Length: 248
Ligand SMILES: [Mg+2]
Image (cartoon, rainbow, N blue to C red; front, side, top):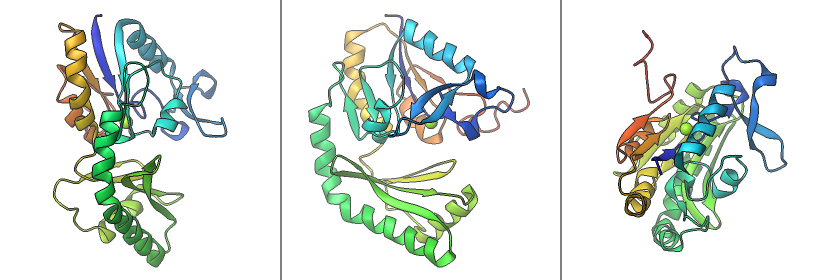
């Protein structure tokens, strides 16, 4: 064991066609994320493919993703353990759902169901008033409500953010407002990649005491879980990098 890599997926290892670098020809992209009907949704560049291969060969690779368990399983990434649904679901080293974590999240989720639905409703009302096509709903894992997700179908990101700002002027204390590209996720306090990584990290440290842990991600909301790792890595063109490398 050389290292443990806790790795965000979307916009780190692959992305939608729209976000792929324009200088990479379409035929050189590899589809890695798929819709329920099997059609490709997300693609890796040749360099991202080599990066994934390098991680797979030299690290204990654990995806840490906002994807639902179902969507994670529709991504062609080698893994057994994983954190998915923004930390709402943990897969153990056998690839099975961590029942203890699930029980804890379910208990907390139940008491936030009404609040999550209220946020989705408020966003829908403002979107309709403004005549903007926005889909706002409570994201479920099984029948467990996890967070409120708002996406625009054909509006731009700024319009989506303006609608959410008008509908939800302030989140309750401890909540997280995750925005990146065309989606906004409003997450209650118990949800977040950092909580789930804090749950799995002691076990990984015990199994591989001297292995350095590398956190890899692209979003501002990846930073908290990356902060639990020994090293952090990000795409140089990413929300998390901000303009840090623009002059390079
Ligand atoms: Mg990401």
